[in-house]
Each structure stands twice: as structure tokens, then as C-alpha cells.
Length: 203
Image (tube, rainbow, N blue to C red; front, side):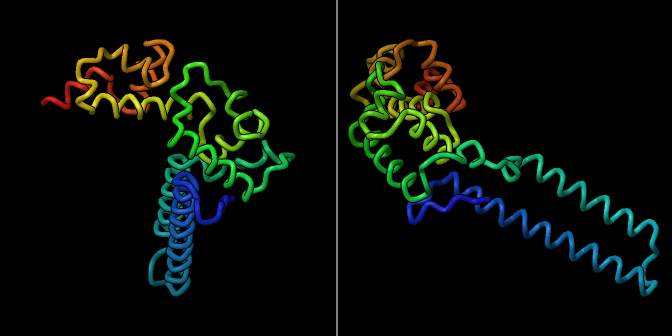
């Protein structure tokens, strides 16, 4: 159920691993509590009703609520890529290369950057690059690039060198090719607008 990508496992996989462990712990505790309850019922220490049905119902509801809050625990993320030639080692290598291109070369600042162009730089197919981004970051290509552009915009907004830049100028400088897409992406990833974010820096 989990994907282990060596020493460079990303936060998404670490979150899945942590959540899965919590789920198993919760399931174990629930099982122990039900077993203990029925032992007490067997020795007539507690009545079968309502203790048995109440305990069972309560624990099932608790487990169901947890499962609804963490639905990815039950998704088979690899099933859609079952025929992919990429293994975990290759995914790690290519994603590390992708990260370098984003962090050092800042290819996301190119407004004409596409999935195909980026895959050519890395030397893999666009389908494989899409798979890597999806499995590692749980995002599609557009979301992944937009997240980097938003972080760049945030950096520029906090830099005094750009204090006189209009929001639109910041958007274009960070790689967005229209202000509407920028506003939507900034709101999505920062949970606030770029204008509100800038204003918060002066309060």
C-alpha cells in the first residue's frame, strides 16, 4: 500500500506511512477493546446488552469516520500505472532531477513550459513524467507547476526589491501567462489572495 522511495521519500509518502500506522494502531486498539468487552461479557462481569452492541457500534463509527477523513488509505495509487516501466528507484531518480530543474534552474518561470517540453529536458516521455508527478506529489502537471509559480510569487511579494511591482507584474514574472490563472492558483495554494497576502506583510 505504501511506496518506499529510498532515502529521499517525499512528504506525501511520509504522510501516507504515518497515517497508515495510526490507522493500524487504531484498528488494533478497537479489536482489543471489543475482545476485552466480550471477555467481560463471558464472565458475566458486564451485561451483553447494551455493552456489546454499544461498544461494537461506537468503534465501527469511529473507524468509519477516520476512513472517510483519510480516503487515500484505500486507494490503489499504483493500479493505473501497472504497466509502467518505471520502478520506485527510477521514480526517485527522475523526481530528484525534476526538483533540481525547479529549484535551481526555475524552469517553471517559463510561461510557455509544457509537459512535453519538460519531459524532453529530463529525457523521459510526457506520460512517464505525468506519472512521476502524480505518484510523488499527488498532483497533475499543471498543479505541480502552478505550486512552484505561486511560491515564486510569494517570494517576490516578500522581497522589498519588488515592493513597487503590481500584482499582475508579479504574476507574469513568476511564470503565469494570465492574471486570472494566477489569482486562482494563489488562492488555492495560499488560502488567500495575492493582494491580501501583500497587505498582511505591512500590518
